[in-house]
Length: 461
Image (cartoon, rainbow, N blue to C red; front, side, top):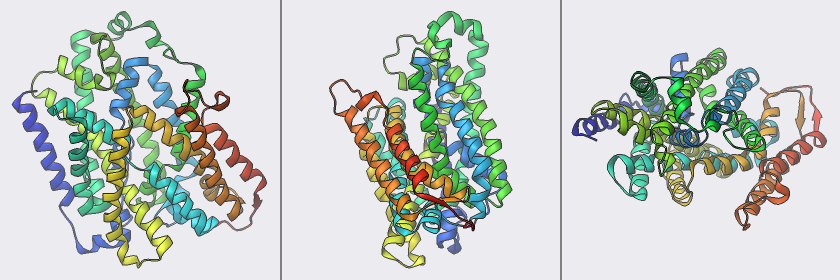
């Protein structure tokens, strides 16, 4: 990269700090304001912060599209659109109308404190931004030549700095900026490729034939697993937090509808660029670096820096969001609920949680080697533990008994975790009975709902 590219990147980083720490007031230190921004999220802000924070896996998408082509859309696109649509239809308005601060608040209201605490522990680990820290460290290694651990430490420290000071409002302000950058960068790269290399004919003549098939060379069962993992969207803390923070129930629901349209457009851009990367760089040693390598090959100075901003913005918007989610889960849902600390101390413990979650996520990022593996493993344990209890905490008049909900979360999560270890620790890497870990956990959770629930005649709002 040239000097102008680095100047553009450093200007972006300075802009993030300014946006993150500006317009701070004493009133922002209250728990409701620090965690949810005073519930004043408008539709444009809702869409920008949800779209950018839920799409942090940009290098993972680049890796998968380089290796498997248009199948990326069937794995990381369509199942998540369906799940987001289900969330909008069945959960968004109810979540906003519940007038709670966090997911465990709802679990507490319906099932009691022990279930809320168990759910909080699961949510804390699910919101750790380990996958995105790994992506950021790889990206910084490519841009600046740093080692992975240096990039991970410095990138994480920068990403949580302004959140530490400004809370949820800082996340939203920076997400608005990063939302524009991520779209501008990929539109720029796609148009440049289209003009200089041509469209579908060029792709068809220069990628493996399996890259243009629905399966990409993978088995149907492998693809089906991702449709189940996508159901984790129904317990996605980023969705609930945005809904809780929305100005109204209609903003929450309609914001998700609009966000799905933006994700469709962005997935088209990223999958197309991944196919161009495979066509132009068929011998690339590290597919995770496919997007940066492609941009370096085809973009001139200045434009290369702008595309680097798109990658940085996409990843960093997710790191700050999920770090803050993990921190608020630690403070509001674990410390406050278990130790009965004063309400005015929640902001203090959220900042402590931000440091703690960043440290744990750093260790996890340096332990794992694949972004896709992190998504798979964390989703395979957290989804079966929480999906059924949380969905029916908001929907229907048939509720699980408090003890059934508690044991469902603990046993479903534990069984899926042990099942996951069965594959990790085996020589051939095959899980028990050849089943993905998510399925036995989900089966246990469904059984607890069927045999441990009863019809109620008053729905808790």
